[in-house]
Length: 312
Image (spheres, rainbow, N blue to C red):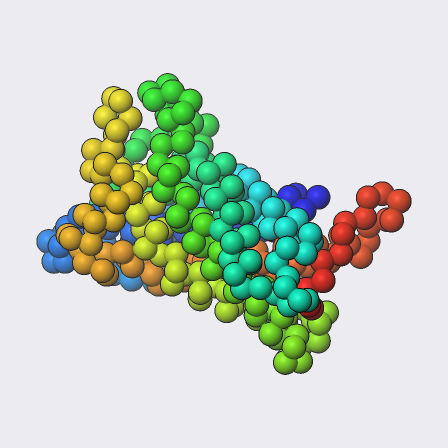
């Protein structure tokens, strides 16, 4: 049940934040491996990008990749948050009755890797679809998929079933760093808020305030890995499935730094916050409240979920 609740919570957040994911993806691909001033800027900032995509492509453009995005969130976060919930309920993350930052970081990273690798094919398809744009505002390599099913079929036909996991190695640092930063900060802030009596233990504001802080931490920690991941997933490949722009993770990281500087690794930072901020707050809030709801209404005779004491 933990896995279903976690996946459902992430899907609820995804519906609202997918347009910002489209904006973030486009901004991360804009000016790829080009120095500042040597390329046309279609998207000046997150607000201009949102306006431009909406004006040129309409609402459908802002919701590109929603289908694989929803399935990805259900699979990835179902496994990630579900695994973390089981680890948390086992008592592993506590030392002497207190949340251990080290243990929550390890647990969050491990859960993130498991979810990221499993959901990698869906992230690949989502990235391809979200980068597809009208030619006048296109950035990055343009695939010609007609939808999620067509994209999966095309990739399997050209590169085999394992072609769906192309770039999955990029998911490991991205999801492990992001998950570790998110879940460790979320658990620590929840405990701090309750200890300081800022809000009562059962208040909705405990989850919301912890989620808001966690969103800042995760965006700052995760954006460079997210940029590299997006570019590796979206790059064109040859008939053998080998990338034509980057040989691998380190090569993408170093080329981006060399051609675009440190700011290249933080492209789309604003869009990342506007996307990850609400998504982190909403998904963690939904996750926490759905768990409470299930635990409060579960019948003892029908496999009641183990209570997770978030006040320790």
